[in-house]
Amino acid sequence: MANILVVGGAGGVGSAVVDMLAARGDTVTATVLDQAEADRVMAKHGSIAVHQVDLSDADLALDQFSNIIDAMPTLDAVAMCAAIAPFGPTEVTPLATFRKAFEINVMADIALFQAAMPALRKSQGRLVLVTSIAGRFGMPILPAYTCSKFALEGVAEVMRLEVAQHGVKVSMIEPGGIKTPMVEEQIATALQRRDELTPEHRQQYGHLYDAFARVAREGHDTSSSTAEQIAAVVISVLDSPDPEMRYVAGDSAQRVISMLKTAPPRDFEAMVGQMFGSAGTMAAE
Image (cartoon, rainbow, N blue to C red; front, side, top):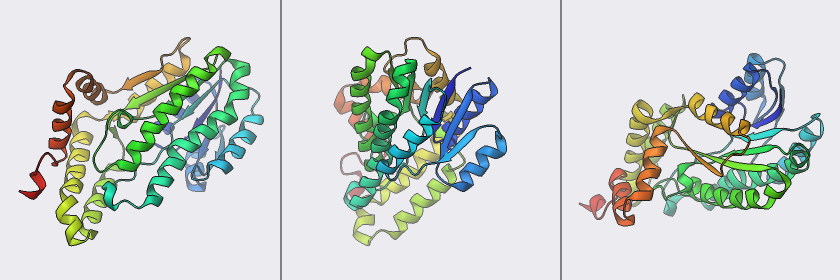
């Protein structure tokens, strides 16, 4: 039985990780965003310690993570499952959106690493960060999410190399699409934001919002993984005696990464452009 901290314990993958760990008898401590999420987790798992941590302020989160970990008898493993995925073309996405994505998707992960390392060094434990295949190639209409995931992948590599000598293993899980109840809301929001663009920007970028909605729908209905499938990968890595640096999780992610590795760069670029309706002069025709 291990003592494990799950950050983002009320979200799709995080919730599934908590469920699986609790079901097998591990002692789980979870962090969530707000009281509503805390109530939801505690209603399912009354014995789990649940703490509210707002990842949009990484300095505050660092203090909160440190206090949470100090109160635990030991810390054997940590799973970071929280992130945000704002969307919108780079030209019209406010800089504040980029900053918030970096704060939550990168800085909070660094804060967690800094808070957890003293305890993980003692236990020679595991840190698993859920990143994304968006950290491996550029995704139109997801610039803030994509660049934050690229940054997270880079700093996670550094973390792994720096602490390997202490017996601590840092690994990344790279999922593709994940089936969640939020997909319908995301699609509706995309179409609403398309309609709110200025006429000029709608002519230039409206097709990207349409493509986002289409790709989200198709992925949800066909190739996306369930939260439980990704959670099972997270737990297998937490349990591994010698985990790898990266794990591509889910069939859709495996296919995309395989194409990224084997297709000539221009062919891959054309494929992504065609997927999002932005190849060549498509939008202007």
